[in-house]
Length: 456
View (cartoon, rainbow, N blue to C red):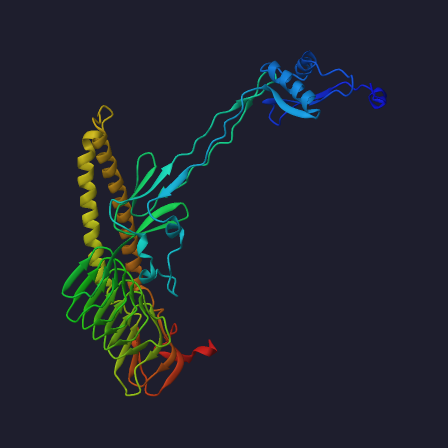
């Protein structure tokens, strides 16, 4: 024996036992003996585990293996030597979109007034009616664990998070809320946790003849002379509307302007280019979106007013602008009454179809029959919601027709002679160039007032 070995004092092996955070496992740390010291004994470890409260799950073979490894490696070794029931944590739900996810999550493009710029919507958002938009892989909730101590305590698992995806407008969810399909053709978008479809009919090319669209028209082309177009939604026209008739239930965006056309809209009429010798009627506003937009000739009737940059020409082109007069109110009231009648009739038909299944004893014999009933109930719910909207619109429209005139005409550029501005019952004929002015009728006044914008 060498002198160095003889001088080294023997050191017995040592160990420590402790629980993991939730007491579902007991850990053993072993340091090896030095010199002629004694190794850790299995019985000592078992006794220590029992003293700290371990009631079951002690693995003596694991203890023995840990002691041997520490001795063989001549270093500290740690291992699990008692096992309870580990909690199995859940997994989050996943949504798989059937079109590029980044497109669905991207906000819809907007015009300066805050309305949707349909002409800038990515075509990849478009889906057909009935098309599957998204599927959900449901969350897995896992299972709880159990401590090693007596009495065993339940250790809660971390549940998976649900997708929190709901069907918005024009989207149908399956009964288990795991599949989402388009009820109507249009553009998919996500608002909060609601997946919706913006109903629209995109067309590339020019329109001619008589055309009718039951949703928003997105036209990448022109409306040709002689065309008569009716849109039951918004309309966005990229090209010029020339010598045509266009009636729009919603707002109308004319990116290419218009010439010698008749245009009527329930919502705003938004202009990105000039309108020449046109008749425009709207229950909202006519708004010029660019300083190069000119309103020349024709007649503009906007119940809530006009925001323009240039009106008329230096050549005294007769141009009439009317605000505070609702020329479309009576027509819209008639349309509302007709749609209310149709909604009520359709709701009654659905109630009649569902009557045999109202009874407690009624049985649904097949999945197809069950799905048909659910579709009828969903359709009735939509009709009832639409009925409430129509009744609200009818009340609002009736109030607006009888409300005091609040409209005004704002021109940020030039108003040329020959422009006649009428607000309510009062008119003003422009006889000299005016720059940056506001036309309005104040309460109690019987004339149109013209004031510079910078003073307001």
